[in-house]
Image (tube, rainbow, N blue to C red; front, side, top):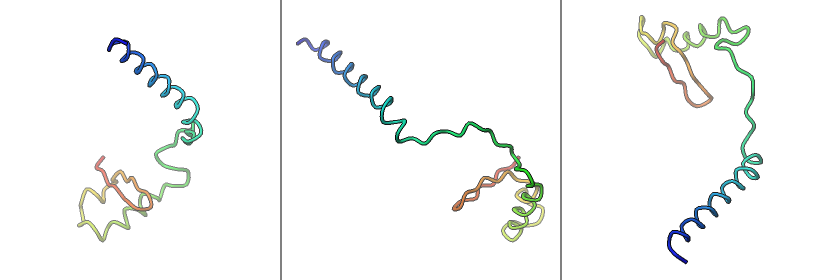
Length: 84
C-alpha cells in the first residue's frame, strides 16, 4: 500500500474512533452543564462582601485596596482577591 494511502486510512480510523468516543463515552462521563446564569451578588447577600472584607482586616493594612470592595473568588481551599 502506498504511504499516502496508509496515512489516509490511519487518519480516518483515528477520526472515527474519536467521533465514537465523543458521542458515546463523553455524555456518560462529563457532568451536564447547568443552564442558569448566576448574579454577582446572591439574594440576601448584601452584607456578604462586608463580612468577607472584615475577615481580611487582620491580613492587610488599613487603606489597602484589598479592603475597598475587592472582587473575591473563593472555594473551600483558596481565596483569590482582585482589584476592580
